[in-house]
Image 1 (cartoon, rainbow, N blue to C red):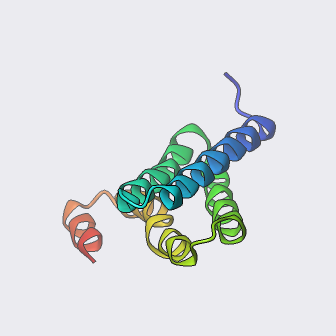
Image 2 (image 1 turned 45 degrees about the horizontal axis):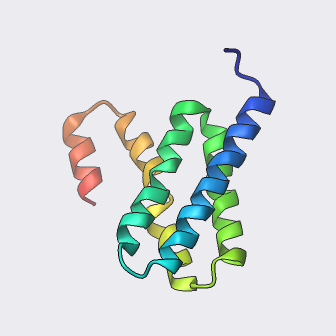
Length: 109
């Protein structure tokens, strides 16, 4: 299937919607909050796999901004924006180095 801007935009919109649904579910269910934050952050590397890096960055930025306005628990939003959200993007750039010792050191930091 040919990749174009419209298909990447549609995939990005679906990933943002799924991210917000999962973050809202983390508010409704007070247990498993960390699991649901991890699940929401797993959608970012999925964006790298099904689209390109530009779309993935836009998904992260869009979901972070919308989460700030939609999600009532600002600490949950802050955890997603600062820790869980950028993890997939940072991990992608770390694994591009192809040096296992540097990868392990950077992942531990």
